[in-house]
Image 1 (cartoon, rainbow, N blue to C red):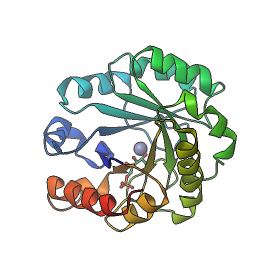
Image 2: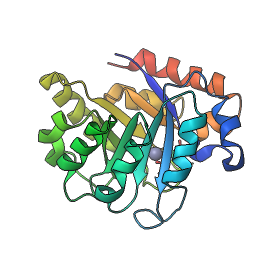
Image 3: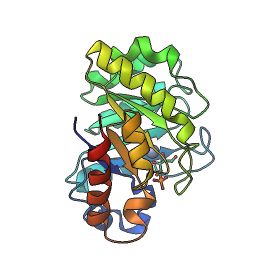
Length: 220
Ligand code: DX5
Ligand code: ZN
């Protein structure tokens, strides 16, 4: 199985995003956290800004929408030409219709769950998605501590993906370090979002390599 490392530009310098994206050439995707100050108590940027990031990044974008009413807003992010668009299960009224709208617009469709949200109700919808994001912190801020108690969700998802034979990526986001990435890989994750541990200290290229190496040994 392939390890994917998606640095989160939430931890980059917002006044120098193009420069900072230029330091992560070895990344698989650029993780872009869209927050609306309603679904989460923090505000980042919206469609116009993501469109500009899409124009300057040579690495495809993995958009994580932490917003209310993704049914209304998510398709517009796919229309920018982004690689994947992930919306929260808690915020949508019709996850299947929205996933299909995203795929129709050429993006991979992702479903995210907050720490308090069970994964079981969504297992029967896995064929509608290209990736599932298990939040390992409460969404809203970088630099928080990894919640290892989310690992049972990943094990359930990994078992179901393997049983069904579907090609669904299993992503974790929040508190990923060279240590916690091992725990997440062992539990079944294959796609790892990392903000602080890529951009906040040391050389981003070396940080990405260290994360990738740690995960590769433990991935299923
Ligand atoms: C949190 C965001 C994450 C965040 C992760 O709500 O979804 O993508 O950037 O940051 P770290 O890796 O610092 O926990
Ligand atoms: Zn995120």
